[in-house]
Image (tube, rainbow, N blue to C red; front, side, top):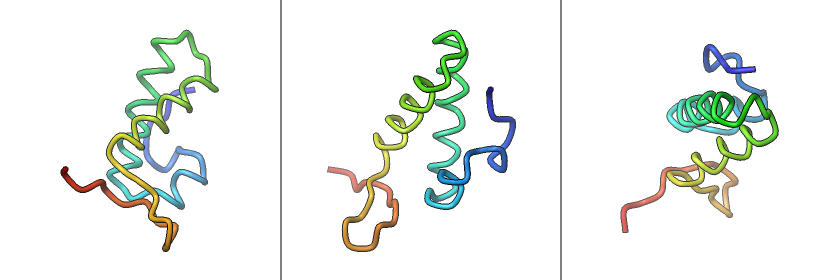
Length: 70
C-alpha cells in the first residue's frame, strides 16, 4: 500500500534514515507501487535503491549520510 505520510513508513525506515532520505523512500515506493502492479517487495527494493543513490551508510557510525559530490 502506498504511504500517505512519512509517519506511515516502516519503523526501520523512520528510525534510521534522515528526513530527506525518508522523503526519497516514500516517493520511490509510491511510484514503484503503481508502476509494478502493487508488488510490495519490489517497491521496497526500488525505494531502498533510490535512497542509496543519494545516501550511504557510514561504516563507523552506522548513520545514513548524504553522499558527497564527486
